[in-house]
Image: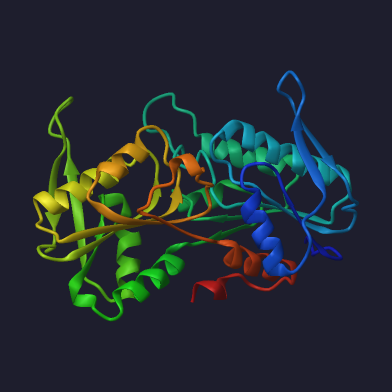
Length: 319
């Protein structure tokens, strides 16, 4: 059994230092002193500038773009702390990269999510704290405890203030069949009805046919997803809801704003009026749009970290 150390120390690598600083401020402690840099050949160097012996260390690092670089920073920092005799090391990964490679989609595929979980464990992490894994069963890939936070309550609370009791004017929509469970939980928090986008590709190289299961005519729609990567599914759904469903306004929310490739251009040209995201993935100024609203996960992670340190259950946070 691994018990907590003598004190909490918060460290960060380079993927999301702003969130790490916010978490430390919420807990009321200074950031751990460390430096993560590169040698001239691209190798990563981690230097800890304070003792971590006997401490409960939390490393804040999203494995977002550049995914492999940020993953290696995390692994090397874990190894450095293990060799410096930290009492317990928790990898705090607000966004867990490779989560979509959780199974063999075709013959001879790698299951990269399992490989990454093994790397984190072998590096020396004692537990993992993350949020909204694309495939929740990834928790079972680890042989160490995984605390899995969810972003829906934060998003729902923000939208509840926007709706202000006018639940009959809004409909929560799942953009595909894979997000139905998430959207159904969202409806229970908001009290709104549910609709589903059923998208089907009739044959190769033929555009998708979208069917809307549920009534969205003259309604304000809230699209709910766990992540937005290239934004193709989200923006196609938004267009179908307006053109086929007769929806009045489109809002969207997601935990992780990956926003790769053509995502920004697609969202900019889409009928989505407002997109609410959590800051698990940093969004550079060059990608920010007026229709973006960014909510901070710092308080949620800070509470989880304090519970883990005190050996208290994290589950009451989901009630």
